Image (cartoon, rainbow, N blue to C red; front, side):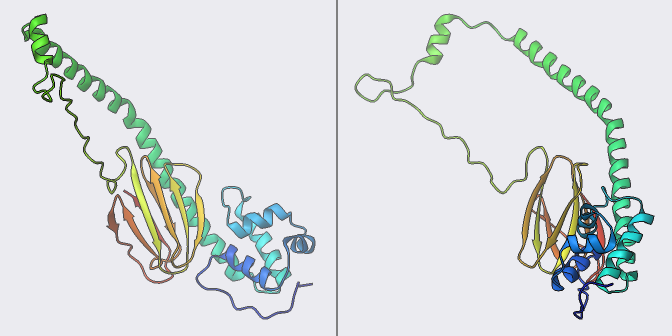
Length: 251
């Protein structure tokens, strides 16, 4: 028997998991009640609400769980199942892109290491040859070079100080990339940083994120007009319409 009787209008700008959770909260139902009604573990229901694709079972089981969950709340499951399938497809695309990037990176690393060794070896040989051609400096010459150029009038050496140049705080990290995200419309975001486990965000207007990566980012954006992106202080345009799902690989 469905739990709750309130009328529910789905939120179009959210994903299937967020919609189910919003519907459940609106009706004042906790996960334990849904689990008792559907005989689905609370942990599995939580993964459905957060769309934890990495830890959800096969699609055939998830579709059955979503159907039971929606049925317990008294709504048609078709839109939520379709949302799950679309989201899972984008998740698998991101995984394939990341796997291909890692494979290409593992192939290039040995060659990059060999090239670096040759370059470092050449630099070392160059400076060694330069040092051999220089005439030796006597101790008297070294003392003259070390002597102070001026005094303070009392016979004491006037100390000379140098000031280190100020660092450019706006410059991107030397060994990586910086991504700044500004939210202008409600949207969800999934992001993979340097091949790590994907992170998920539900963002509202005004939310900001600052992320760093050694190699780059893979993004799945639920609303193409919802975000503004800056990579290494350069604006990144997002092509797409309102509500359109967009995937990006940066840089």
